Structure formats: C-alpha cells, structure tokens
Image (cartoon, rainbow, N blue to C red; front, side):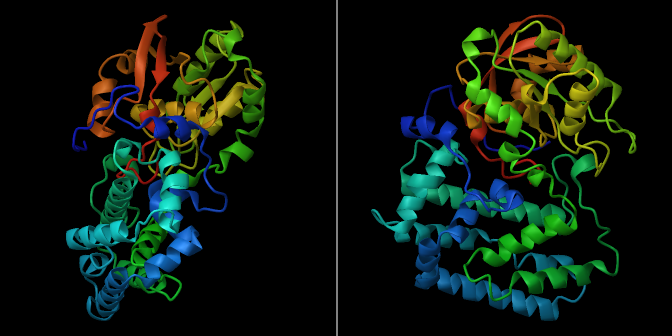
Length: 414
C-alpha cells in the first residue's frame, strides 16, 4: 500500500479560480503519445513546443546537465555488463539533478516568453497539476517538473529494476530479472534512448521509461485513445444535445469486476452490475451509463472490463451506444471513482449535478465507507463527495475537480 504526503483540498478551496474555471474545458493536443502524456504531461509539452525546445537547448545549465547525463549513460553501456541497476540508475534523475533542473527552468521562465505561454495556455488549464494550483505559474512549473521526474523514476524502478508496484499481483514487471538475456534488452533500450534525436536534458530518461513500458506490454494508459473520437464518439455527440435538467442524475457509474480466469471476458459480477444499471437507466434516472474498468484481472489480461461491459449492455441488454460512456483505464475502486469524475469534467457534463453509482452491495458500501479514506491515502484527496444512499446497490456522489490531478506512481492509469 502506497503512502504519500497527505494533501487535502476542500471542494472549491485552495486552487486558483483561474485553474478551476479553465480545467474542465481543456482538451489535450492531438498527436501526443497517450501513454507518455498521461504520465509525464509537462515533459511531452516541452518536447512538442519548438520555441521552448530552443530555450532549453540553448540554456548553459540544462545543456551541461544533458551532456553529463549522456556521458554517464555511454559509460554505463560500456562498463555495467550484466548489472541491471548500474545501467538503469544513469537514466533516473538524482535529487541534485531535479533541483538543478528546477532552478534552470525557473530562470528560463520570463514574462510573455514561450515557456510562460506554455504554462499559462497549456499546463495550468490542463488541470494535470491541479494540486499546485494555488502557486504562482513559475512555481507550478517547477512542481510539475519535480512530479514528472518522480514519475519517470518510478516507472524505471518498477518496469526496469523490478521494484514492487503498488499492486504487485496485477502490475508487476513482465521479465525475469535473472534471465541472462534481460541485461542485453536493457542495453539496447539504453542505446536507443540516448540517440541523437533526444537532445534535451530529460529526453533520454523519458524515452527509456517509455520503451520500458512498451516492452513490458504495459501500455494500458493508451487504451482506446483518443476516446472522444473513437469509443465515446457517439456518447460525446449525445452529451452535447442532452438537457441534463430532465434527469435526476448526470450518469450511472458501473465499476467493473474483473474475472480471475484468463479466458473469461466478462465476469458474472460484471454482468449483474450492468443489469442493475440498466434497470435504473430504464427508470429514466440518468441519460448515460458509464462503464469503468481496465485490463486488470488476471495479470496482463487481454480483456478490458469497460469494453466488455459496453458490449454486454449493447448486445444483451439493448442499451444504445450513444447512452454508454466507456472509462477503460481504472484499475481499482479508487480510480473507478476518480476517472468517472475526470470524464464528467473533461466531457463537459454538469459538474454540480449529482451522479449515481450502481454496483454489488459489498462494493457500494465500500464506496460510501472506507474508500474515501483510502483515496486520501493513495491519491492525496477525495475524488468525490457522497450523496444519499438509494438502496444496497446504489449511492449518490458528486465529482471533485481535483480528480484531474495526475498520479505519479500508477503508470498504467496515472
């Protein structure tokens, strides 16, 4: 169980009104790798902006940092032999590197320059670093860099070095570290990641981390993206035409229950939860059903809970596609709730309207009980506020905008 610095934000509390006002309307730029931008959003923005890239490449301090980094990597490739950590640690950011890079970025940040505009026009409105929303823009920039560096280090620690993730049974490394061929794979990754195209101080490290996720086949963060124009296109069009005032609830959330058998696409629990939601949907309680759950159980399953629940709702229960919103990334009940809140904000649904979650009695009672404490422990905030309980299976909730904040230590669903 992960423990992190306690961070609590009251609804409508410490964040700047500017952040709160803009975040829900933000859409991510096209053409970005979803696995990378969801984990390290600032770093992908720095890569994308040619004017910012020029600033960074021409900065003496960051240039020195890059030169020292690439030199250490080159030496490690030649000398580390079969020592995995010897090689991987050269790609991780040291505390000194993180502090020095933060200082240089803050010095580069000038009124109306390219870096300032990136922070004001992209970073702040995205909401991805919302827990720093009460800071000045330059301070938020530094905190975002520190978070992304920490996220890169976490990815390398788990998916290169074999450190334990937060949930080892479902999220562990795919390789046997004692396999004689494994160090050779890492050397190839190291050489590819330190190639000439990676010319900014952080690029060898983010590339190394990204390739590590790729060869581990842990690209779940990118599943079905871009969802707005693919699996959720029909529901997005319906949202724009919906008069939410006609319904008691904005949506009905169905958290998934993954099967434990490898060849089973949808568990009996998942089917029954869908049926519970369909009953409430036909009562006219909400215009949409949101199915939530990723490729979780068993380890490295090929089946997505949300995708299979959507198919079941459509094929077996005759729910129209434009009434179903897929959320195919959540891996735990904490992120079922967080990701539902995110989509409510991202998709322009009414954020002050109550939503409903329908699930098995045991999980429903958990959502209205101990889960909020677990969310604070694992996410640093409460992603939802409870409303009334309707039955053993159904309980109301309100979304919290803090759910837009990225999570640095869940690479498959940050």
